[in-house]
Image (cartoon, rainbow, N blue to C red):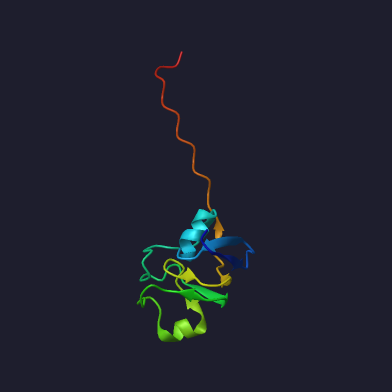
Length: 111
């Protein structure tokens, strides 16, 4: 069984578990939580959030954050993997919208 870490989003108070080795963004989506994102590869900064507590790991040095931003606690959830419990400031976090039901096919002329 893979290790996972609890993630708390502020100010919403939403919580989810992020498996070790998975990005914070993918874990949030798997838990039904939408975080802002666009490129999903660490360059566009659309997902940038402030990490209030905890630690993350990046597979490579991502160009999307400066050294100063990293030192201030900014992370890119699309490529950040948790290595501890996390508390993240993500004011735009929201529950994922349920998938819309498929439209009913037209059945022909009305009588």
